[in-house]
Image (cartoon, rainbow, N blue to C red):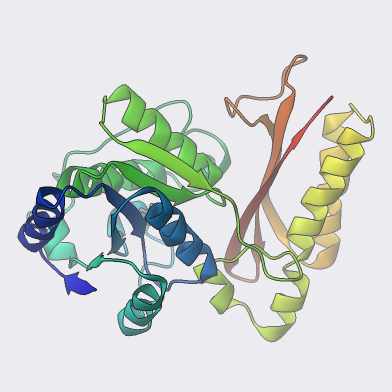
Length: 283
Ligand code: PAF
């Protein structure tokens, strides 16, 4: 497994693999890899022959008061995990390589509607930064398949819509959330939690499970169900950012005929913002 830092090197390595008749997979990440990321790589390895993992903490998707500076950068440990799992190439560019003329005048990709609300409401410009960097990575790599985690469910919807609208010749695949034994969704930001906060954090997932059970059990007073759940989060010591029920296919608010639902949440625990979601069906 090689690591390259420039777009020229990435393109040369991918071209060699293509000449050998290989199908190319891409797993875009911001590094600090955990088992959730490695599951994405394994998924890509099942469906393609040559898997590129990009590691780039993308400044364009962080707001001015967010955790860009403190976001963990652990390239050596990431390389060793990727070697173990069988990835073929690591692409770890610098910000200068990705944004040689800076970010201010850089072309942006904006994906309206699906980027609005949920994380888009509390992180203005975030999805524009994500869509822009992902489109760059897709253009640089030109993979057959790109795999993203479902923990960032809205992000996955934004990327799917972008790829569809811009006729990008790539299959976008979503992979299930990987959780710790107590239910907490794996996230690079979990490392920011204190030991006490780590004990509390699984409550987020527990609340999502309770909401799904109540609705599957017949409750249709959704606002009251969500209000009760919000209060549980507050009682546990969290500060809910959003807790919403949506149609899992369209991400639109739930309509009378929605059968596939998803409850999505973001909540602060101290200064750490956790997100999670749970999809379920109605009979
Ligand atoms: O999900 C992430 O880690 C990032 O948002 C992504 C998709 C790698 C773009 O920077």
